[in-house]
Image (cartoon, rainbow, N blue to C red):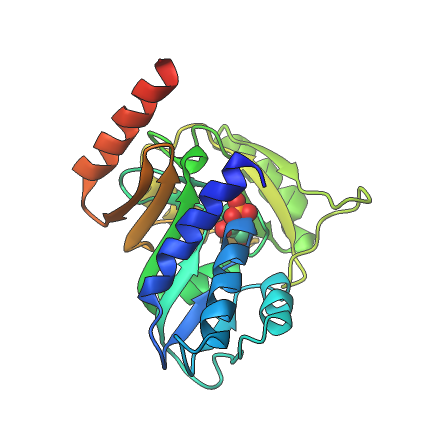
Length: 248
Ligand code: 5RP
């Protein structure tokens, strides 16, 4: 296992304490969440956790959860979830996030907006001073609108790239759409950009997550830190500690 994988696993396992017996759980997508799914499955098997039901945010997560025996439901059964556990591509101290590296951004946002407690699990490589600094924002676009939205994005001085799959064809999301990975550079006002993108009919959804995290668990060289929304000082201290370690 790589060092990053070890950190991802540590963050994922630290999130499991937020899942109690009887809970309905939003199951995110990605390599960090995979460790959380394995942990949940273990807790179900050894009896420390009972009667949980999950809603998967992607077909990939649905497959892993099913293989591990985690019972799944859909929003036809419940309309709110107790807790949602997911990774992120980039996070900053305002708790703004870029998500959608795994292409599941719309379902992830639906689950995040309908969950009581949103727990985000990341390794230290995901931290930025401001989102957009290092990661493009995935925009899920209706295929017929991909070209016109790419033109529109140029007017915002953003550079977009159509996501391709392994065979070089357009990557198709679980919702049948394309993804434009769009570099805006550092995003000073995530809420403003989020609303602007929401106003475009051709954009089915985007990976800017604003006000959708309650707890961020960061596994890093200095240990596992849990930061609640608003605890900017904790975020800043962690940031300083990591920058110091990297420069020495
Ligand atoms: C999927 C996501 C993931 O949470 C994000 O891409 C992080 O993935 P990983 O845990 O593999 O680094 O938003 O759409």
